[in-house]
Image (cartoon, rainbow, N blue to C red; front, side, top):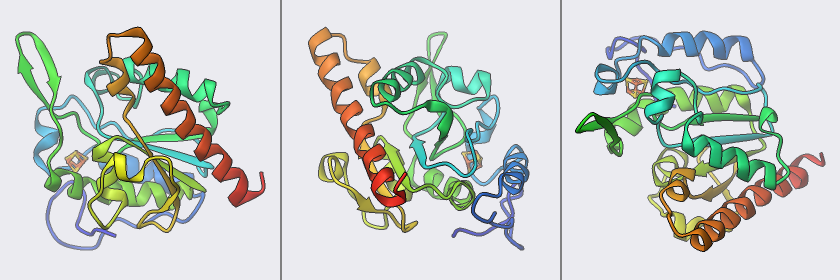
Length: 222
Ligand code: SF4
């Protein structure tokens, strides 16, 4: 677990790590994250976007970072990528209200392009800084299965550097000691213009989510 005082970037006692299923403690952690200055991304973002969902939860989805709409709304996966995720979860037979959804990085990193704010991939130091919060979410949510959505989400979950291609279609133990499924970020499907190609990419995402669901069933007997 990473340590440092949230919101100060300084030294001192770390914020307590919630116990499994302790939603109340996680809410306190989420409130602390609103003042986080552990990296520079808070400077240009509207607000922190913390994870949401039941605590504990059988499945925890970890995306990359909030997008433009998530940054404005303050909630994860509410923009175009969120709609693809909703569609894929429904096709996989997973009720989104039973799933905890978060991002590896909690502030929107972007660069201007005309009047638009374009997503910029978080750097390794920003992912490392924000893992402080992810550690606490995983501890509280205590998922049976983690799902990494996209390359940035892989980084905090595995000690060794890896790729979606190397891990996809398998169930791996992440550094949290939790069964982990790796897949693409739904925004990658949003960007596909050709209908057949888009359908194939969505089918592959659905298959990965089904793998997560069957792994939950195997691990919990549910
Ligand atoms: S991105 Fe994460 S570590 Fe960086 S300021 Fe925001 S909450 Fe803190």
